[in-house]
Image 1 (cartoon, one colour):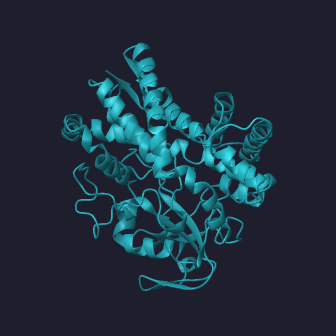
Image 2 (cartoon, helix red, strand yellow):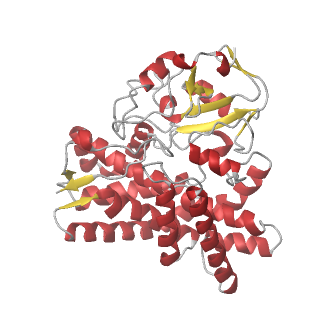
Length: 408
């Protein structure tokens, strides 16, 4: 039986909205109970497989018989916008290409995201965080933590690593936010137009850097190209675009959702304040719980036997990282926040060859953001009832947090 054999009424609509940024959508309990492999219905009525089991998800993400190529005619588009971009012929570097090209691209960028490079960047990240908190506190007794702190910090850290000047960074960040608009209602062609504007700005930036080289990952990529081992033309521009736009909202939303979760669990928050040295393990647990970048779309290129069922060649497959991170077979009381949990096995950054290349940077930013915020604003609390804090509709990121009103 394939995913297209099930009557539409038996396969719930997907993706599902979160009523709380760090809790599962209401329909996930059913998917978890029906797992590890069930069926869901996309916006266009197409039915695809949904993987919720940890073991099954890991096996599939390592399987070369599944592809990330959005240009495949059977690739599962989660939204009209993503279908529109695929129809326009855009295949994202890194996250949207298979081996061997993926391996080539990853080898070019992975040194910039290595542990030593990120460690050297941490003092700068901390300095930016301190400045942002000081400005936020000086602005009065309340603020939106996302626009005042988590998003500008995530953007600034990424721009610093890549070597992007502030003016260019602000231009790109603004258009990225429009592409990720919470309404999900950009006019036809608007998302492609906005992304084209980002690409044009990057072409200008690259031309400037070719004339006056600086420091950063983009400069490293240009140097590799000059030595004959890099990427040419539009492929290099597209790769820079993905590196610039791919992680800011994810990191920012993880910070915001983590702060909300801690404020809703004051005993855990107090533990972290008393034992700031436990921040690394706490971030693993908070990242596991929030699983902001929830779903990984794939398409099967051959028949695959999984969990006693057959995924046919051409079937769309969605792997839910949140459900893998809430699998009772792996985690004891998985829906509970426990900063003492050994949560390093989580898959919130993905798994397999397409695991997030920027995860070391994301971890550093999240750790720094929470450490500085809890130290500098010890009386931090929500400025609205917790049930008024919502995640964006799941058009792009299932756990994207548009705002977090706080006071102190």
